Structures are given as C-alpha cells and as structure tokens.
Length: 280
Image (cartoon, rainbow, N blue to C red; front, side, top):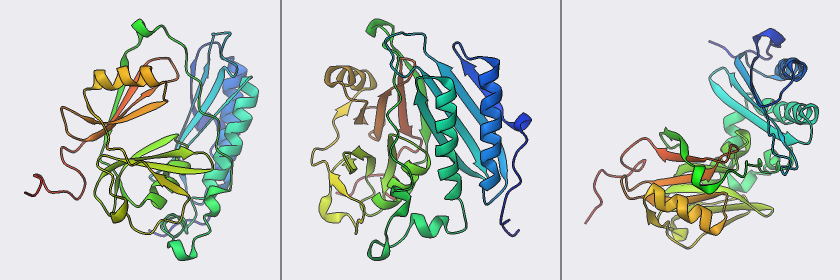
C-alpha cells in the first residue's frame, strides 16, 4: 500500500481526552481542537489521538498544569507534552511541540533518523528547544510506591538513533540496546548535548557518533528495585539506571508526576543481540 502525501485532519470529536485534577470542560474542548488541528500536517493518516490533562492542587508547584498527547500515525507513536502555569498555556505549548514532531513523520523519517555521521547536520536537534522536565508532586516519602512497571523489547540503535527516538517521543531519557556493544544503555540530556550510560561501559567499541555525547565510565550498579528507589531518593536524581538483581538487565526507576515511582525494564531475559549465556 502506498503512503499518502498528506493526512486529513481529525475531527475534534475523535480526540480522546482524559483529565486529572481541576480541569475545566472548556480546557478539554480546547485540547481536542488544538490537537485535531495539528494532525492536518501529518504526512500519513493519524489513526488515534489521546490527550491527558492534569492540574496539580499543590500551591508549591510553580507550573501545575500538564498537557500530554499520544498519536498513532500509521503505526508510529508520536508523543508530546508541555507544562505551564495555566492549562491554556500548556495546551498551546503542546500544540507547538506536536506540530514539530508531526513534521518529522515524512518519507525521510528513517533517512533522517539513521543519517551517517559524515553527512548529518541533525536538524531534528534544533527544530525545537528541550522542554523543561515535568514537575512531580512532593508526596511524603512513606506514601510513595512503584505504581507503574513498563516493559518492552529494547530497540536496537546507535546513540544517534536513540537520541532521535528520544526527541521524537519527547522523553527525558530513553532505554535501548546499543547497536555496536549490545549493552543495555540509557541516553539522556546533559547540558547542550547528551550523555550515555551502559551496563558495562565500552567506549572503545562504540561506532561513529555525530551528536555531542559524553559517556559515563561507571558501570551500572547492581541493585534490587527497592535499593534503586532508595538510591533515587538519596541522590535526588530524576532517575536511576541500574542492573536489576532479579533479571540481570539494565533498568530504570524514576520519579512520576504524581509523586510515586515508575520502573522501566526490558521484556526479554537476555540482552538484544547477546547470547543466552555469557561466553567463557
């Protein structure tokens, strides 16, 4: 089946909206209209669109309003989110970020994602500024729990490709299998560039990289999930990358917006491209 050059915009009634906290019906309708209008620039049909709007009641949160959109563009997940002082601002920022991502869904997607370092200018890195990390509710520590456990087969990618995927999905960090080393790895923003952490760092085995990238030289700590959560609280980091004692795989625990914790882990018991047992 041939690809379409353009997509017909969704009707606002086709956009699903979920709300959390004191979100007005008018804001929900506004979000439907903004997201629906954004879909007109998609290069392929938008099969599904869902928006989540949440408003924190905590007066200490400086930007209490969060708007997030998840779209299925012919089987490709597009995600964007924004935080602001008002829901109106958050929805407008969400629309801006969503349009940037939808423009990247053209026919040159894989060419842009996998462009060779020698001829890459990485215009995708400069098409929009990094958003501010989402605030999270300051829930009392004794009430915090791991309430979300996400597992998936890690994508096989170079650091350049992983950074592209992270930007396209609007993530603060991205867990993947590094293509040259086979290592469970995480890439995340660091200053004006990116930083890569691996289960067992192997800088001499990485292939050519064109993004500004630094590599953590420290192996990922081997921890239980509970120990990882404790370390998360101790050092005050947004997330902890660790080797799960139970699975021997690279995993992440992180702060969720609701003050609880999330856990991201590979679904496969062995590393992508790695043998089931380590060579002697």
